Figure 1 (cartoon, rainbow, N blue to C red):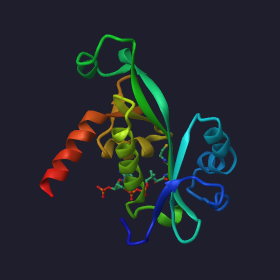
Figure 2 (cartoon, rainbow, N blue to C red):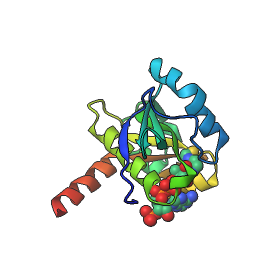
Figure 3 (cartoon, protein in one colour):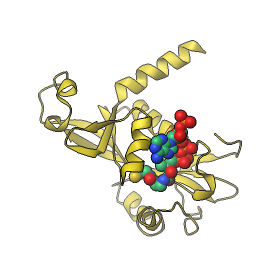
Figure 4 (cartoon, rainbow, N blue to C red):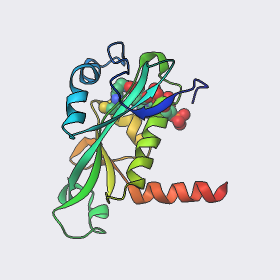
Length: 173
Ligand SMILES: CC(C)(COP(=O)(O)OP(=O)(O)OC[C@H]1O[C@@H](n2cnc3c(N)ncnc32)[C@H](O)[C@@H]1OP(=O)(O)O)[C@@H](O)C(=O)NCCC(=O)NCCS
């Protein structure tokens, strides 16, 4: 990541949301107009990376979700209990301001979101995302996410895989 000192923190009323410019109007509008209501109603949690002062350089949201067992690749589903759904955490949105793109911030926010889901005491099988387009889907595939066979823009990453790779990284230190 760039040497810019980002502060990672839950979204707060003091943060400057109006200037956020990620190149995707729905993701900008959501941060400007909708997210505080979603947080208040507990339908989403929002975390931001702050650059200088209270400027938002990137954000992501997390919420509980579920995946239909029948939608998962057969090779994955056959190793899971025969319930109709498996619990998941949905990263509903992830966006980085144009001024900070390509510096590792998006990947860092994704890694922090995965850590948060892994550390939760409430079990979830996977972190799932709904990619808004092919470029976003490619970003997630680059980070190891697997697309649902019949919905290529819905992708998931098993948290046991993340946990195992974090343990390997820690024991190598
Ligand atoms: C997608 C997005 C979050 C990436 O953020 P970023 O800060 O530019 O990405 P990073 O610099 O952290 O890239 C991390 C890694 O992902 C790779 N990557 C970035 N965008 C990619 C893409 N579209 N396809 C494949 N790989 C991609 C980078 O090459 C880098 O690889 P490396 O770690 O092996 O060097 C950002 O471009 C964005 O906000 N886009 C608009 C909103 C959006 O599409 N959100 C996705 C959710 S729908």
